[in-house]
Length: 125
Image (cartoon, rainbow, N blue to C red; front, top):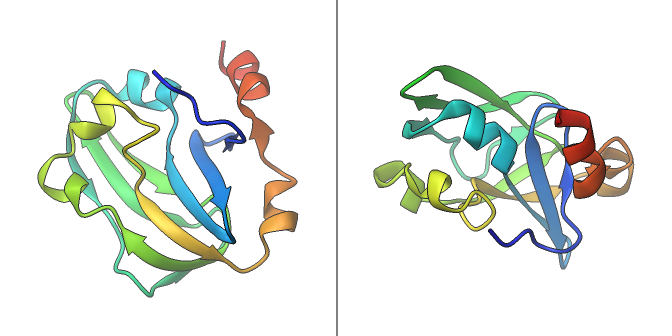
């Protein structure tokens, strides 16, 4: 698995990757491993806005259903439509199977509460 450089993770197991003022949001490999085989995901509509730590999606696996929390406040620019029909892509590579692309409203402040990947891995071990 290829962990993108510069990725940040939340305590609720979402990852963010900022590029050119936009942020990709996904689920960490640890979260996906805990869930098991993903069978369904419900994603928000593009152009909807969310606050930091607000539930923005739900995911179901063979083991459980879970809520997914927005790690940065902002507006949804794009939803990964591939996941609607093929949610198992998250199991194959959680870092290329991003959930949403966000235009953050206050990225620097929100990112300050996130962890670098190595620190996150230490915390979940």
